[in-house]
Length: 296
Image 1 (cartoon, rainbow, N blue to C red):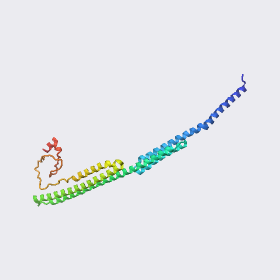
Image 2: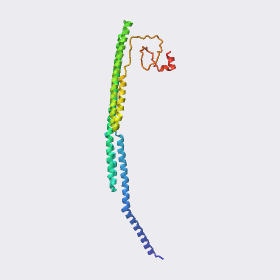
Image 3: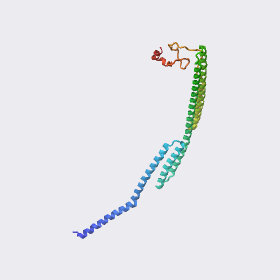
Image 4: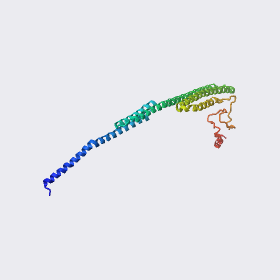
């Protein structure tokens, strides 16, 4: 039977052995596993920082408007991405040649995209400026013509405001201003026609420039079609004739009943004098039975 002293000695020996085992395990963990764990934690933190950086870079790319701004943002994104990869590969003792080659290729591709996007942006800006200028010119022609017509109407009313005028004199005044109004409308039509011709030529030139920029070796096969289309458009505009705003020589008198003119036409080919409260119904509408009933 073990004495009490022997029991305590055996217990102390077991405890010493147990603690010695724990110390050995702790030493082993500290020397190897702890270093691996700390490195793993560092990798996790670095990966999160890299992810945050790339997300910010992508946000900068997406919000960039001008081509130069977008190129700078894209290059920063590429640089941050590959700097991280090269650093991690170097820390792991790996060859970074292939990573560096991919980095150089993406940088070169970004430069190519920038060159093309800059050309496209310049063409788009030129087209928008051209369209805006054409719109301004059209509005200017219209406003000037309307002002002139209003002035003629005022002058005519002033001349007709003479109670001593005979019917023949009134008719002469009406005919004079009808011709003046027709001349002004024809002048405005021709001015707008010239503007439309210029715009058609500009649009054709811009289209050729765009195709040359984007199609490369295929451009020679596409450009002739654009030239032909532009030529047709120019010829169509040039062939347009000014509407016959006045035929002259006839003074229409209302019988108080109205009438439905015979025939059908897609263009205005008949003059008419209207009184306040009267209306004109287009010939297409006269095909409707309700409109016929209204005109009867």
